[in-house]
Image (cartoon, rainbow, N blue to C red; front, top):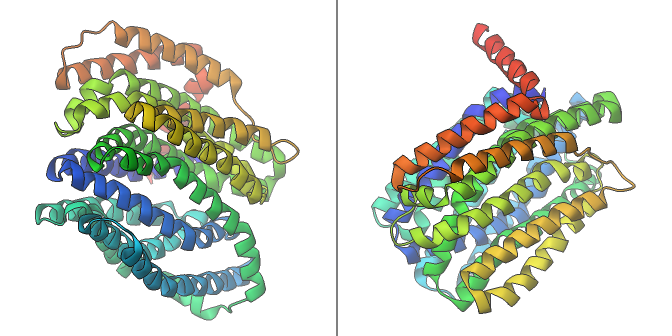
Length: 481
């Protein structure tokens, strides 16, 4: 199931990568630094509201779909969709309160308003997608995700062109989600109507999902506190530059980790439910090895080509500071991805989501303390130092909190061999000339990728030879079908 998902979700992540990089290229040029900073802040606010209201419902759909009977799934639909309706009714009042009480300028309020309006349709589409992912319907999930991601980027660019400022990217995402719902929702309505709302069942879902939502809220605090502290001690233009550099690194790695998480999460759940801990350990080790094999060189590669990559992707007004930020955020993105998409999976599998909250709360609180300590003195540098240290703490906390519970294996052998291959890659890239622009980026990326692949294959890091053969076989099977 894991490898089926790895291949099936690959187009999704290609589209996400294109849209993610495209949004940096387009919006850092079409929006002023202040408008781009307003978008970054509005995205943080709307993400927090979305997480508070809707994430626990999506988490329950993802975790309990595979474990329940056909009749139970009908009641699962009915219970969760009615809970969603209650949250959707509460959102407008919350949105009005935020927009009225928040002491910010009109441009930022417009961006926040656009994000809040889009939350309902985006979350409803996400709930339908989570059901498809849990059911192993890779094609259905992938089609809607690609349409929402690509369409949201295109519409956001149009809205930016007609002068919507920082609201444009968020409004584009909401409009694309609304269009996708026309096709995604009909298949969900029938089971929801046939089922019965069960308050007791809802309590169980809430008990499972609420700590996940709280964990993600703390995760958002970990990811966004630095922006608000930067805004308080500097200005929105500095926030825009930081967000550009952050996005350049984080989105590159996040797309990769989301791809593997889409495949790995359902595969681990299915392995545990059907084969117990032995099956889970085999699936998890295989997943973790492949994750380390490709994410470690990706993070190092981003740090090595930060300058030419920023010159290509980021607008002139934000470019220099973005290049400064990129290497540090690449390292923090590596810690974040491995923790969120692998290590913390142990808590959802064991249904001990309270520990997951603690694993994220500790680095989030550390990040708040570090940003308040470092940003007033060091500015942008303080923000990126605090972020990297906090995410490293999160990885350590997750490993320690797995003790006396369901423990996911760490592939130390793969980590060591991949680190050796990454060191060889870095040595080769650092010998390349720094000519600037696309030429430098292409040369260093090409040499680095080839060096890493050859050394990793020679060392058989993470069973690279086996994985290569398995992926090729899966691709051949899909092509023949």
